[in-house]
Length: 265
Image (cartoon, rainbow, N blue to C red):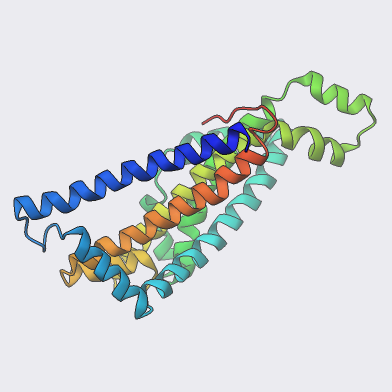
């Protein structure tokens, strides 16, 4: 077992202990302080609701629906970001336009433009996908642009001197050099996509539509089923932890850390 694997195992153990302490504190606080279950249910009741909603299939269905929309929105955002960044790197005036758009749109929450999206696209899944795409595209563009521009010119010159064509130069020099920034941008985009999806689904819940986990949380809150609300939140947290630990950290271990690079952002 190498040092990286040992550090990962110890990190996981420490995080597990911390989460266990938090959950124990939650349960003890509810029992000792006699908090009303309508406002703050016990962790045991939340787990019961989680199991019940999972067994009846609703949580699974809502989770799949949310992940489906997020997958489409993120895919569109990543592909669009790659095209826009490539054009901005090659053409100066496009780069200037992209910088202006980043300054305007990057700080703007995607949910803020949801009323306009609803007017344009209605209240169906296409509106949620549009909000997810708009929320996720800007961190990918920003980090990809920074990553490409941070590559030392000497590395590019060495690649050209070795006879690499434009495709090979991009694949073997530019993308590996910018990868720490790319990974950081994808992490931010993933988090923003979840935030946008849940918020948009809650709005559509208010308008009578249906959706994924956000709609599930809204519906349960409307009927004052607080334990189910927490159960829906737990699913979002578990998916986030799974993607972070199994997805992003695994990719980081086999690329960035193995290459001796550092992530930014």
